[in-house]
Image 1 (cartoon, rainbow, N blue to C red):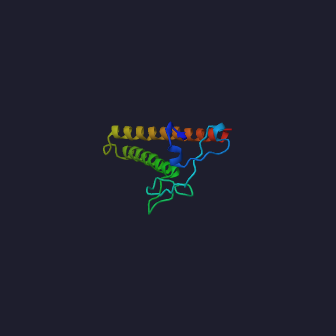
Image 2 (image 1 turned 90 degrees about the horizontal axis):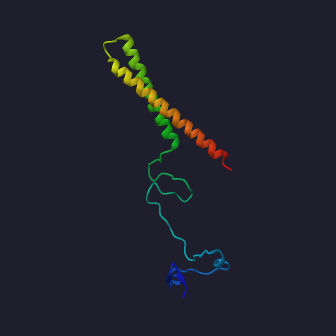
Length: 131
């Protein structure tokens, strides 16, 4: 009686069939039917690869995430510019602290974006140069 994973008789139950050279490689081939998988969750991979949407849902892409981040940075830069313009044209309408905070937010978001993009480019170069 054969054993698999230390359990006697399980090989015959699972349909494990010996092949020539199997004992030399340490591999235990498994015979039988292929499993049929159904895609019930949009996060599962489709049969052809990728993740096409189930229904109307569109999967998030790296490109879209980067464009959304750039839109956020641009919005903070515009807020900062508008606050500075308002301070120059009507100093009583805007508090100096609000202008300083808007400028700091815009600067920080730009620096974070620059760092992320630099690391993405560096990672891409590492992938390209991998041999």
